[in-house]
Length: 252
Ligand code: BTN
Image (cartoon, rainbow, N blue to C red; front, side, top):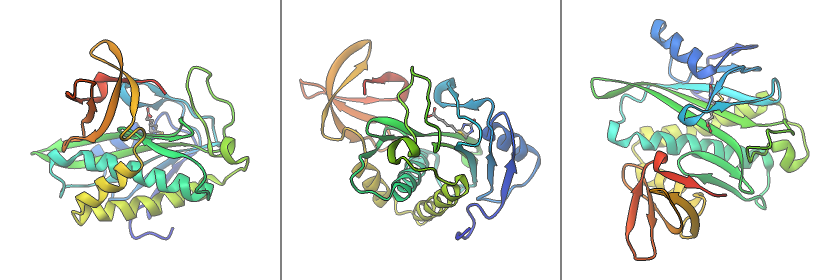
């Protein structure tokens, strides 16, 4: 691993219910070093955002959790963690697919889309103590060699896009490299450069898209993000709505 600390310590488990849950349980009893990765070949009960499940066929996908100790980061800046993890996944997918022709986007807050289909998902679970982020488990699922998905979800994989198979180890190494690069930018407090990079890749920025907000379906202009990471959507009267994840439904 060509990194300083991300992925230097890898806990590989042939099978586990959820790498996030395993990492969280371990952190309660063991002082794991920052950058420790919990990686499995077969995640049997993967957790998704907002209580959903993350299904990934065994041995065909990357399912891993990276442990951070961002005690330097104030809670009001938590969203920067979401941004750097999304940027790390974005850069990894872009590097592996080696093509500038492919449309890769970050769908707020942190889904990675290729041609409007989800290729990677992120679940961040924080432990906050004394107004500080004590530890953070960043769970990442990247669809790699899987070619069949539940028809009710709009998903894709590296293989479906390029036709090639990829080594999961290579995907993990690539991810750790980009993860460390973006995390170091965060540690150096270069917050504006993180937001700039994130906005550059944000799906729908400055476009009118269809959303459901406050129980109504309408076209709204994606203006960007608030300082705390809420989505800013402008309606036809010029009113800007600041919305939380739970308040927005997207139609891709
Ligand atoms: C989502 O988009 O809903 C988030 C998906 C996150 C999935 C990853 S796979 C590794 C880690 N362990 C989990 O149980 N979930 C995350």
